[in-house]
Length: 405
Ligand code: F0G
Image (cartoon, rainbow, N blue to C red; front, top):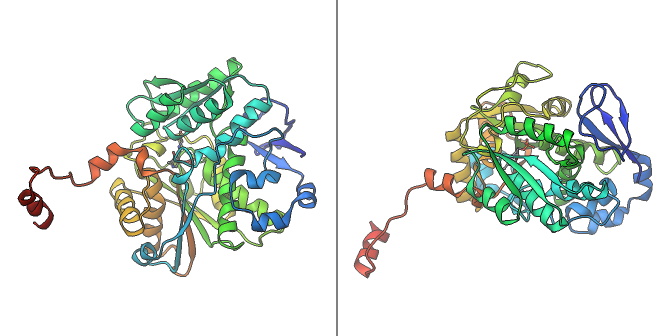
């Protein structure tokens, strides 16, 4: 399949054989550009309509020629959530639960493509900075591919489950005395100097994997497009990727409209929201981001320019929520719908509620909230926000008292 990389700022082109993360002329972000006429000609439409969703179901739209490094990612459930819809006050609400991916987050979609690309390019080591989930996914796909992985994490600010995954799957785990933004700047420098393949979402191939969330949503809604997709925003890759997926289905004539992309951050880490509200086309980095949602504790999102374009051109918006609002949404998802998510993921539902309450989202819309990571990623947060279990003597009287009082 033919494709190349194109700078979103100056339009410079780069060949697919190059190992490059940003534009060599202006340092702008890169996009993967395909020959859509060729794809259209070769695409098996019957299979598209009938095969079960998974990342590699859409391989005609993915830039990998080798047998991919895969542990069966994607194909996550899209739940219709009537009780939650009623509480929030929207007509039709779905939750796309990306926590059901093999490593418990949507990052698997990007890493199956990203690590496959590393192998295809002949790279022998992969690396990333991470708030946790990216590192877990990189460790696992690196292990599956049989190549070493190096992950940089902000010391003291990564959920336990994610560190456990990175360690057990054999990554070299390095804690940085700084935040995620510091770690990302460092790993970018390292990968410029050494033959190590950078797999943060500044790498456009990662986003190609993540765009399959859009394909699956359309697929699972019976080839209908929702009015709006709401999701958490951290480094701002996923909102960009999903928007690209919806656009490609329109380009290919599979769908005829696109949803409004709506990004949610927390009040303690919301540079994208501030830029959106100021109608600016770039962010002002925040030096000390802070939130209980450690996955999106990011002050200088690398994909900000792409994300702001995606929000604007899709007619979407950006909003921030408090930690208290996201914890309430996390409990609502868990207790009304049986969907267990980590704190960052719950911002999508908290943000939707806030925007519906404010009258900024119509109650008649069909909305999909993306929940990006599983509850078990961050057990310490759960313990800190839920009532402690009671401990009783091992006899029936004490048990009765505990059950019925
Ligand atoms: N939700 C979860 C659970 C995440 O882990 C992340 C990002 C996001 C949302 C935001 O996605 O960055 O594409 O806007 N986690 C990255 C990591 C930064 O290192 O795991 P984004």
